[in-house]
Length: 343
Image (cartoon, rainbow, N blue to C red; front, side, top):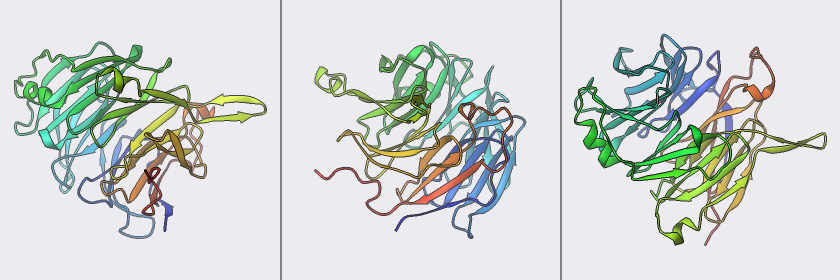
């Protein structure tokens, strides 16, 4: 059976990210423009239980779990990369960028923390040596970051995409000293979409990734550089609605792959979440419309839950945030709900 509920205690300003613990599928972190990170037990009580909230100096743009259930890392408009001890609430600054930090990501196999900032750098933190980091210069401002077991994909302005090998980044992180190091991307690509990239997400099987744009489109491509593999690349239109005879196009803000079935979810400015089968190139299902723009989506590591962060976006045409539409929804998926086409 599938069921859906909203968390009872939500942030007060737009939600920037939702992320489940890789170890405990009911432990959820939410970051918000209200300058807080929230920690929930989604099934601790009806409507979920808010366990703790952690105040920052500025809006928080991203958050992730670290080496265990009590370690988190956050990034935001205070330019800082922070470690949060979720049991004591203690916060430690690991590095400081020179502009806002858009994304933070932890790669467990490499014990590597990566932050991406609008100052066009990545900071690489080897967590066996906390507080030390190396820096990599990017060709342009990063918008989204995603990792597979072996690769890091960085989507940037000017439709640029760099793909790095995580093993090379891990070695670079060990140089430390806050120095800028030169790591050649494994591949440099140009986005196959004409408009600005909003999100990227890697396939769990390490074969490729999807990217989405502000212009109601998603592209699916594979890492393998062979001509045969690159010929499989495709893009499709989605998150568009006919309003009074006009085709209204919405940004695709969120992308997430299901860790078990390898299908993926998209969330758009139209308040819609859809599930897609990347291989069969078809939509599996579309969910009932949410009350505002979908900003972020995440599946739990066991694939049983999907968290959806909903907040008004600029496409809603409102300057002031209306009450009551900043919500996190938790959907419990049935066993076959996110399954692709049977071969």
